[in-house]
Length: 486
Image (cartoon, rainbow, N blue to C red; front, side, top):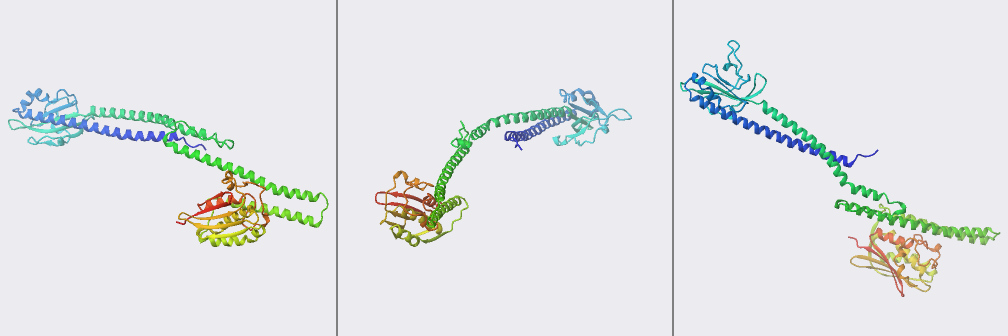
């Protein structure tokens, strides 16, 4: 099943984020505008009420209210939303302006509007200061939202008149409704635009990833040397490209090594099989004596032993390369172990007319079985190439950084160009140079399978150490170094 698009997911997330921001900003602007409009309207109502009460207090009587109605209504002139009603001391409406049936309801009997027809409002005393807290809210007879102040005013003759200054808020609510609708439209359009632009920008930003994928698709078994090359890679992807190229390089080297190893293994296994087959064919060509058949079986048995050691060595190398290969580290006397190994090889060395000598002293921390196998392989290799009458020295020493164990033998020097490659699997400087029969080797050594030195290097890598060879006209030395235990 095809996964969802990363560009689409990021665009949706970007759109959701933009929508959230728009909602928060739009709500803030709407509330801020509503508060600003309400504050301005409250101020207009309070000022108009104060002015109207001050003008009323300058009049003599209720009749003066009617005579000077224009003077009082001038307070709300110029603003069609503002209305005024003035009631005489008897509670009857004396003046009305711009009410449009929104304020006092007429009395059912007389048809005249009175104070009793007003909604239940808090009346401000004639001596009290008019403030915004005195503003009340109600709904007019025509359903319009109304805000206003109902206050008393003391006339000069001592009578008390009442004034109602109100504002029809319908235009304000319509303004706010239109503003909210525009915010909603702008928010929806902004979110859609943000998602579209975000999708396009994200696709453009992800183009280097598509180029990397296209470049990686060119890597095949026959083209392992291909590397990911993307022009103008963003800095965030440089580490990814470098890691992928490093991985491809490791895969290439591993594949090449595996190919060489497979070819060398097939070649080396073919040799003993060919020997066995050839000997059997020769033996079957004509009747043979019992001794000849015994000799053939002994030769074939020797070749079988060689194949068995080769297979066992290959299996060991395969297990050693596994990350979960277990080592049993312990501390032991290296010189003592070298002595035991020399005693084990003493019979083989005598047959080859080679002397063995152990020198030095050191304590090493390593896997004892692997230590014995590494030194045995080096000693078997030294016996094979040491001329008769020569001497092999097994030496142990220690420094501040490592414990050194060397196997030195006399004999023909190894050319410098071969010193590093001799640790490769199935590599031989001279395949014809072998003075030690493979059947005479103790268990754990590899004979002339071409894997002995490769196993030594693998063992040292398992211990975090190293191995190298030195060769001159006097002797050849194989040196392994085990790191000091921390």
